[in-house]
Amino acid sequence: MQSGNLIIDSFLKGVNWRHGFPEMWLTNSWTSLLQNLPQNHEINPYWLSLFFSIFACTPQPPEGSSSNARLLNMEDNDTYHSCASTARRIAENDYFSSSNAISMTGGTSLVDGCILGCLAIPLLCDFLAAKGRVCEAWKLMGAGIRDAQSIGLHRDPDSSVWREMSEEEKYLRRSAWWGLYIWDRYVQLRIPVLKHIPTSEPNLVLFTRQAFILYSRKTSDYSQN
Image 1 (tube, one colour):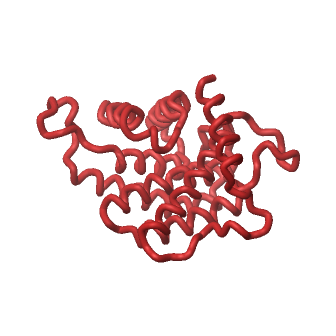
Image 2 (image 1 turned 180 degrees about the vertical axis):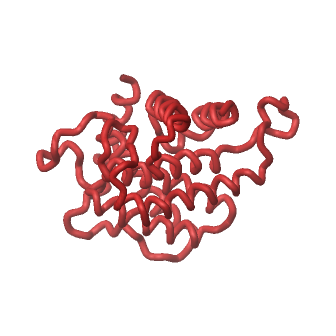
């Protein structure tokens, strides 16, 4: 699994600034995944989708790099994207009927898994857009936004209507929703399509400058703790 460790490290150093995953959370989650594999546990497929998405979006070292650094061929990025898409389909088709799949966020909540899937969507869209497949990214974004709204990611996690949740879950919820929102607007700039998240729809969080500043402050505070 050394290659996976190197890819995670490369992602954190060169790509994660665009996505804002907490470094400790990501590395601990990757370690937990590796520890569960030899024990024949059923793994939450949303975790597989997220990590395969990370692998697909992490650039390979240049040709002149050492052999230890360049462990994979460029074609493997396409393979990882295919694996991420397959894991997502498995999650959507089978996970909701499974009582054994584990969620390494501290519970077995189906919502936990769906949050991971929403975090993976911007990564998959990033990969597709880099390949010039923006229309596919737009379709995938629509599916991700529907999933996000079904579990309330568009709602303020600090609201009193929610059950008590950890700061980590609040952070991940905000990151997932803002990632989807930003990509929804980015795709609209690339091709003439409708927004998946209309600004005037009732009961949705309004994306204002003040809201983004508040989100940035909260996520910054969490990342530094």
